[in-house]
Length: 179
Image (cartoon, rainbow, N blue to C red; front, side):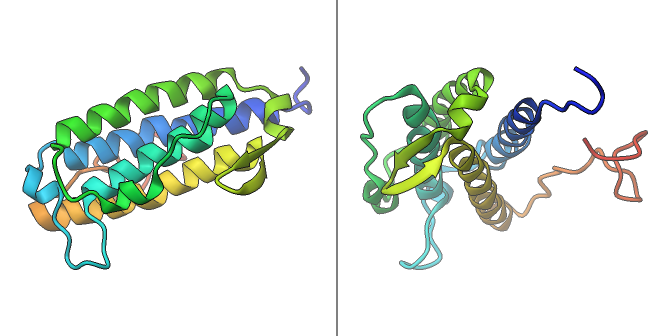
């Protein structure tokens, strides 16, 4: 491959894998693992979701849009149950369930091909390309990871330290750009 020939598929999948599995997922996990069950299921009001609901929702989304769709499995997601839950699982249980799904998602991202990314899928009533499905999962996980981190930080009062590797200029220490 010459310098002008770029493996866009490989770049897209590697970036998606890195954002989802090396940034968002570990940070979400670190935000939640020290919380009590009461904190995990706390809601400011009935119109809002708890951290527990958001983790169940992320698990359902990643499984439906990334794992089951690309593995050709039946969609068994119960989205209303993700938001209807009001307890019964500890942080460790929720994170364990999501960890298993994330491991499956990692395997899918490691094996996807250009052909699968340009193919069309029916997911949750939407007609989307494989590329759109992967992008939706990464974007969606980022959105809800931010909500989880905000709630966890509000409840615990602790600095989560996600960017402690940055120097005072906002750059990765010893690096011209953040990878």
